[in-house]
Length: 201
Picture 1 (tube, rainbow, N blue to C red):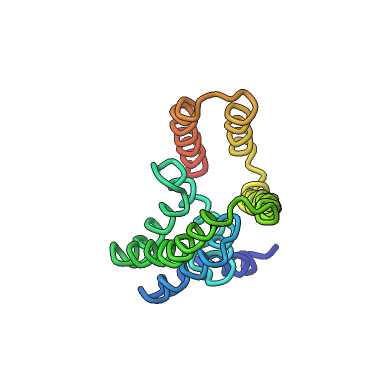
Picture 2: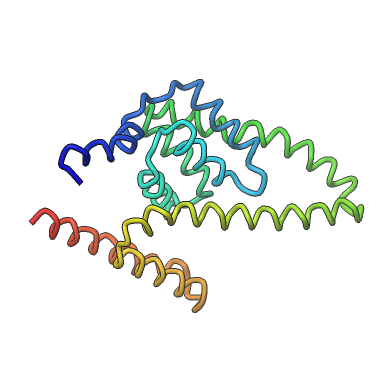
């Protein structure tokens, strides 16, 4: 590969990272659409909208932001809306994204809760909910694989080992989440710091 071709190969990620920040209304509408489309979980649609559709973040930036939100208390996607909106448009942006994410489904779920309280024992409805839960699991697995793609493309052995270690500790050994995080977070930060120092040297 010639030296002149290297910058060109990086242009899509650079363009995505420096895309023009959306306005407050655009943030509200984008997260409202995510929440209304997010059957089985909003994460799938949030990643698609932020990374693929609007290119407000690169895949790596989304993974890093979601990782931060995952370790904060509260629902991950709600944390993501606040962190993402605040990152682009300050506190007002965080409020706009947060409101867009929660306002439409809250209204819909209030109506559905009233209906379910009255007809929840109907067998057809119970079977329908069981089918929806299967689709939700499939969507979650799909987005997990898409978020893993940047890590696998770089073939960063240390990162993959850390990821598998956390998976085994929580998913297989059933160790307490808090205990695993207390070990995994410092180790991950330390490893990344040492790797960057090695590259810089």
